[in-house]
Length: 401
Image 1 (tube, helix red, strand yellow):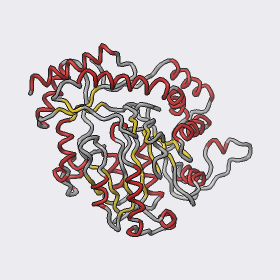
Image 2 (cartoon, rainbow, N blue to C red):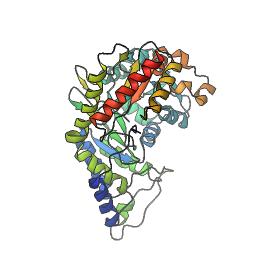
Image 3 (tube, rainbow, N blue to C red):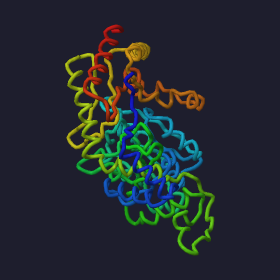
Image 4 (tube, rainbow, N blue to C red):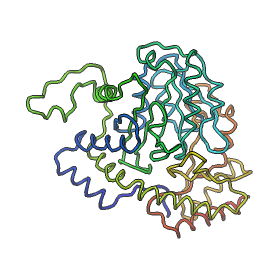
């Protein structure tokens, strides 16, 4: 069976994890702090906080900004549930909008239609690793700043809608030569096991807030907020006589450990000169094998200004129904090839339907979902396996269409 997206676990990873274990420091410590610095250097943002998941990072930033009851947060209907769930956790209202027909990313036109005086945050999602249209989205926040209703000091200081990027897929992608993490106010990465760069579980908040915000000071505040509201972490308390701490707020528990950060340190070291090169080769091979078949709509990985990080290969098949797509997938599975769908649109899921959302209000989202099949991408995927995947897809489509 060709798997879908197993992590790359080799001797370099294993040796670094063992070194972390033998160091005697396995929770948040020197490796986590070093990983944060490496991310900041790589992305070109101002400060970075590593956490146990991207989901935690998104929710912490909503809470930091004071998002709560009655506030609205705009997001794409085409995303994973985590993007919407964190809004619900804060007591706010998810405002879903449709996506672009060509690249799965949130539509700037639809965002603009959805902005009201209750809008506090826009949460674009970099689907499959391709950055959203951040210059246009950032401009919308400025354009509608007079409509923004600030209710706390942080919101008054920003004076406009916060752009909080769900960059779970897009670590290493770029627009106009700038890496994700530095394209807008705040970006949140995922390092889950299936991501290009993994820490097994984990995520990071890339702070890039404009002046007069002090991103270093915000980083320190977030360290407290994400560790029970305790004003000293375990590393600080190891200093002689520095055991005494205080609880300054009812915080959360979502810190990254040095064990997981140790994986990330190896991953980021070889990311550009190895991981991304291999992933680009895989997507280019898929494209070359599929491009002459008019039944397939191929994904976009580069534009005039953007370069993807090649996280997904979201293939769309023209003129099929959702039911046909599912049958095609079953034939592919029967050929011992693992494929997936990204994603079941959030308004189509039971919980969000119970809140009154109707996925049929998002026509492009529905169309993309009904025709999409994600093909395997992982570091050890060989060229012969890629050909096997493509043959399985073509044979399955031949049987159904």
